[in-house]
Image 1 (cartoon, rainbow, N blue to C red):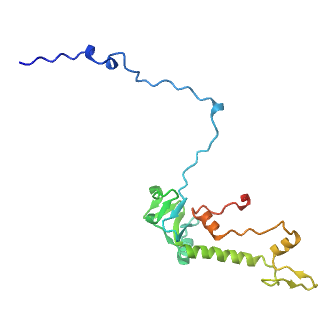
Image 2: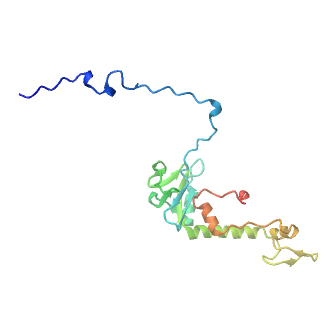
Image 3: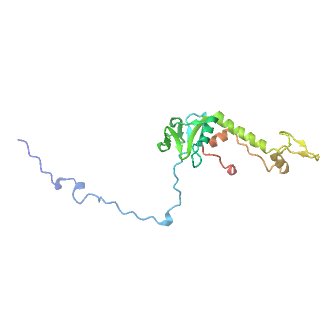
Length: 202
């Protein structure tokens, strides 16, 4: 017959497992942080609207899908007619390259409150912005004054061709219109965050 194995008792356990030698299961009490040591900081919710298109030749735009108490869809229909279409999640990424959060995906489309994410070719979207810029510049032209160059007014004075030209004439070297390059406009609007405050530009 073989030798009978010894009986396992607490005395045969390693010192670290002996009764009374194990650490306390209760965590130590934390010292309360003084109010004066707490730094003021905001709790910012995630920006679910900060998205980008996978295709660099496409632009994103959040449009209203329902307007007013009766939730009219007329604005959405207008945007679709203008060339926009509803973006699908596989076409869109967050700015750090992750998939669109499921919380804003509904019926295969990306929605945030009353807004729906639309997509359009970048050439069409930037082209419309250029057209709006040109139209806005024409609106500041003085009535009866030529679009380019100087003309003579009824009293014989030289009439400037635009309000900006007149301001630059009166204050030479002090006033200059800031017109961003297309690359800068594209970089500032790539995340669909809206216009930037150009007053803070160096």
